[in-house]
Length: 288
Image 1 (cartoon, rainbow, N blue to C red):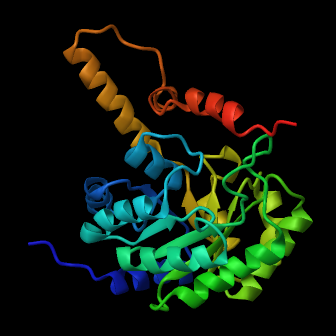
Image 2: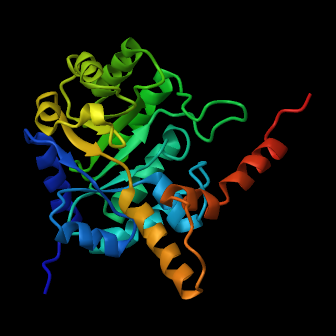
Image 3: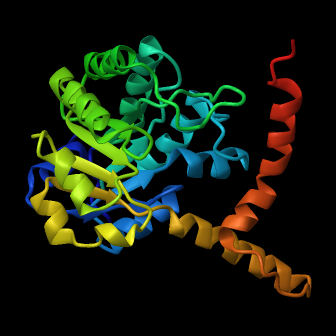
């Protein structure tokens, strides 16, 4: 019989990863079975991505359509069986600072070991970039609210920002502010290379998490570890492979010729992303 893992003990396991001198790569976990597989294969940490949850739960693109309750339901299913720490991509906390508090309470109950709160302006306003960031005071307030809301101090709160859309000085200012607010770690997406990372990490003392999507300029675990990086997210290839395998299996059953669509293209097709873009133009545009 498999040993049961308490949520509290898994949170301490994640803390040990943050406190170690090593760099660990996440497994993309999107349901109970994938979480069990990841643990059995020896992964130290899993991640439930917001974009993956939107596809898995709604078959919808990553347009901030999934609600907190839907995301929490999926996290709870995973949390029931998880034998490795699971990090939840909690997007922008599903609203303002008060919404962030609710998000932390619900995800803590679901059993996640850690969660990221990003400073992206979501949902995206029509005509604006999906990478627009909220003002720094509001973002800091969200970090403080998240820390206040947790009841288990072992739950790690990681503040996330986008290093690819603002200057290096702005990245440093935001990261330092989140660190000063008490964040247990800083997550960054959009770091270009080791020179960029070194410029930022020199100003920080908390553990770092990078979303690299397999960036070849950041493929050196030892060097990443020396710069304070403890968690790396390369993407969610396992989930997209599952989409492709499902498509190919069902296609063969119907004796339909093979498609040249990639896994990502299949995900876009069946999440009706193009329809959502048309609807955005129809219903979100500001008419004068």
